[in-house]
Image (cartoon, rainbow, N blue to C red):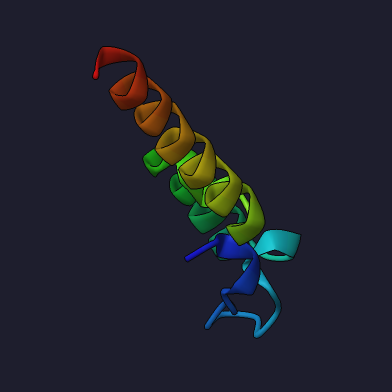
Length: 63
């Protein structure tokens, strides 16, 4: 899940906006915790498609 969809329990605003100290702290924690947290779902799908294509190409070349 990306942090842009999370809502802060402290101020009831999106965490990605960072309106309160709790939002800012959680946003920083999520960004440091996971590299893929900042990517949107379409970018993750594109990376997955690229990985599958690379594996298929390598398998075809070795056969």
